[in-house]
Image (cartoon, rainbow, N blue to C red; front, side, top):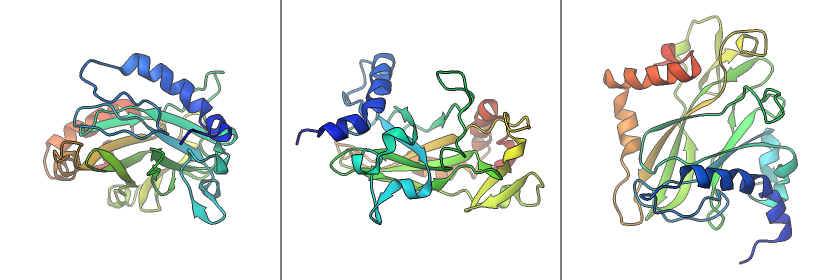
Length: 249
């Protein structure tokens, strides 16, 4: 079914970003030619996969009491949400960061003023989207997230956030437990009076099967890495990018 004019407007901003991403990220071994996060794709292990993350208020992700995909024009997010688009490799453990240091006009991105919640999304027919998860308000900011993709025969069916819990920051004065995640005081963040880099970091994991029925294993690998010193190496990578994760694991 052809996209309606209103839907095309709703994803116009995404399309510009995706066009740039396509030029930069396309490679010979990427069998997925779909770059629009609001379009459907069938993938195999190693393919690139485009998805988006929308930042807005909690109520912005539903209409008439029904939770909708950010691609749905009924939400009207094109004019009131911040959007980031990523293209990781399917079944590779990845760490993504949302750069909040500046926008194209040079101003920093304030996720709290954008509404403080985020939803991950991809696809049109299945319209997979996560539940909204808290990111930031004037008091606290969560900087570490784990996002799990569930595929069935190469089609994304579900996205969900895996809470890490708060045991790692228990008793630390600069942190609090907010919705089952460690959150730093917003006043400790750069641009808010502090020195902590508070750009969100999103660790990705994949489960289910690709279009050839090959099992996607990275979610199993991520869950097991916490038991071994190898996970410390991955934590050091997070530390090099966001500077305050080392005490979280």
